[in-house]
Image (cartoon, rainbow, N blue to C red; front, side, top):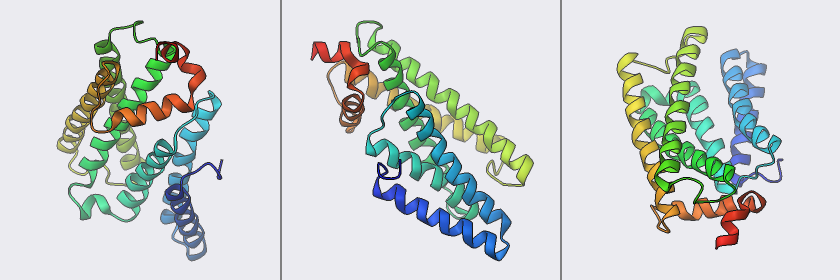
Length: 213
């Protein structure tokens, strides 16, 4: 698994490993725990997709690692949420777009790439709904971390949560539109290249799509 990781992911793992060991040696237990949790949350999605025989392109692997690192380690351990007011908004917007795009690919994959199995707008709408659901689950995760470990991921409470959900909705809408346009033979901000890279890595699961190309 290590050899398949992009360079940025390897660098982040090294940084987290150093922080984990340093925290244990110096007695900074919270820093060590955050580093360990970040490493675990980075690995879990990769193991999960491999369990189902799904191959992720390097860009997807890099984004997953960077997002978890930026949200948990930088956001909490390095206090980026407090130091940069826009940090949380950028993470939520980008994650909603990425998750929505990945949701579109998974739904599209269930039809083996048959774009006629459901209208393009329906696939786009489903990806939007999946991204919003995951965004809601993330808010539950933030609340749980705040309550159990004394973090401040939700900051101002209701206002922060609702702002995050609005940003999630905007990001999810962009990804849903990107999926819709792809099925129409168009591109939105380079999303077509990402979609085709995923399809290329999982050719057998998009049999009907490849037959029509």
